[in-house]
Length: 114
Length: 141
Image (cartoon, rainbow over all chains, first blue to last red):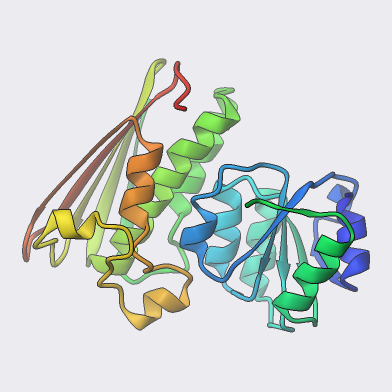
């Protein structure tokens, strides 16, 4: 699935990385616990999280995650956007809960990691 | 190629800066992305530990053609029982650290999983030293 499809399906607002929306992803992982995210070996992944701080973006950077979706209508800080831009990560905010966001993407073909 | 970075305890805004810099260097050196990920996940976990638990720390990295060596030396409360600290799920992290998405007692075991060599030593009320080696010319299963 292309990242622009991800953003469209969840009615997300793309905050940075518009030039990377043609990138393909196959998997998604939903977590507010970055320690869990850091144990994942899979590439080509979207991180769905309610954790709106710079460490969510840092974790994505270290884990080669292409796209971070911040759910539950959390306020994304300018520092998060700046770091995502610098790291080449597509950052999307959306109003839905983590459950709904995950469900919509699963329904449309994104795969779970385990 | 050697680099040194300073880490401030409690400074979560900059936690991960050193790991990010090391990642950029390894990318420029065309290191296999899977190896880069193992190196920076180890370093980032260890860096977050310094920010979460210590007062201050130094990160020293030495990149050579066959391996990357990382040493994190901190001034802090130290770890009274390393065996216990290595147990999955054991954590002494503060609520603030947990709010940042860490402190689940998974960092040290995750470093051990990703590293080829991992050493940790600590003196209570002085600090902790973590040494990590990842070989660049072999893939871990």
